[in-house]
Length: 190
Image (tube, rainbow, N blue to C red; front, side, top):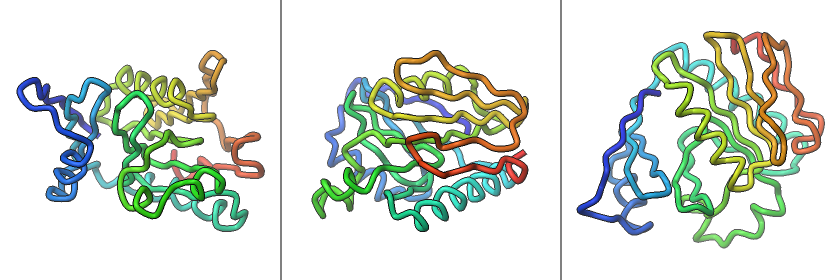
């Protein structure tokens, strides 16, 4: 997704005001960085949208089968511990963490960092910005993150306490111990 940042120095939105802004403008996808700056994200093109739904489908199918947690698509907002509001292309949290949320928390942006995230690079995305976003997820508690770069047929794997692992042209990716038994098939993504 193309992104641009609006520095909201004159107006700082509360969490509730930001949530309401998003609800009142459902055709616009917003994120906020830790400083509170609004990031407006353009819709994806057809190919990226198709690949996003394929990724979300595979994560949801595994999640439904195992019942180990809850999967989310790119329209879900997460309020990270550092104060940023982010919407990864696909995400998952454990059943235990989902059950710990109140009914009210479940209806708004989830006040936690996902256990697992995927970002799919669009042709218009800045790779360095996506890398910073992936590092932000990792620094805020994500246990496994994949940055899928279709243009270069490369995946960057983010894990806490480890250097980023780069895998060239993989056919599958393993959910490791975070998503036991999950395998993302990349042929429909490439």
